[in-house]
Length: 532
Image (cartoon, rainbow, N blue to C red):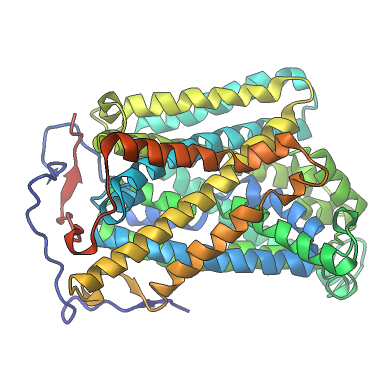
């Protein structure tokens, strides 16, 4: 199944690469100036697109989705959000395949909407990804408690995780790509293996011999007692709605694909292939795995409810492990915990990469201090990387007595809302991009990658996620919890201050459609050098 139209280089109009005087970043790859290295091969990009940011959101968070929404409600919630995320990625794919020399959606939002939005999107995304890296570091350190319950060792584990992702990123994008390729392969293998295990358990092949079939889908498809809300119909709807926010956290990070545009070899081909892989990632890795897990475990299972209430953060919270242990399968829970640990580490590694590139892009555009655009000979934006790594020290919040779940929940809430805000910005940029093309009489046939569902899919993304964001913190209202409410909506005042502050200081205006720069700055074989 494919959502994009075929691109024939022989019959489709050629993309004109006009000479852009102000764009002095794009240079020939033979340059001796510090520049980004296009060392990520097609296999690296494709595998990162399929499984790069899969972490605790799928392996652990899916258990909360089943408990909140029931087996049917959780699948429907992940399916709806998955479709919206797929629309968003195809919108982003059209823009970044057309101009892979741009600084991703940070530049697209400034070029197609408003320079103030570019500033806001850049800093919001940097904040989102540094928090995302911290979330995964916290998760990885807590996951180890499955084997070592002593909280006295948590600081050691946080330190090891943080130093590990720093070393991989400092080594250069070539080594980063190779590392992420193999760990993404391990994630895919783990998910496929867990799906097979769930299928065997469902069909009665486990030691307990219990053939579950669609028992839980029939008996309790939705959660009729969510937060003890009455009547049951209201509880079912609100439980399903809670799944949407959880699904957004699980899908968070897919937009990080745009961060590797500047370092991908033959980006127009590799990014097009990677964007197409998003559909299969959503369907196979998320929907199918959640569907099978929901067939094997009741949403009222005491082990599932207790794990979610305690927020233990280890494999004990995973619905897959609960299925394994309750069906009598031995040892496999330790293997799954090890796989979840590597997934959290890998996801933290990619978030650190994305945050350092976001800061580099901001510095390139003059929206952050120029020192963060400094690039080492191996192509690593070292100052941007060190700054982003410094925020990983927030993981030590996990070392305080009783603060592990509090810190994790705070940071995960910030990350989930940040992803949705970024997706709204991408959708808005694509809407303006499409309108600008129509206003300037440019045919969509010039796009090397295009989808039949766009730009209407972008409107669906923008409207849907605005609604989800607005109601995402309703559980903090009854009973009133200032802490939960603040952690849920902290990003919104942050972006309002950024946008209007930059707009007031720099007197920016929304870019007129007829004056919009719709030129692709990319030329084959070019690289992006540091301007400073």
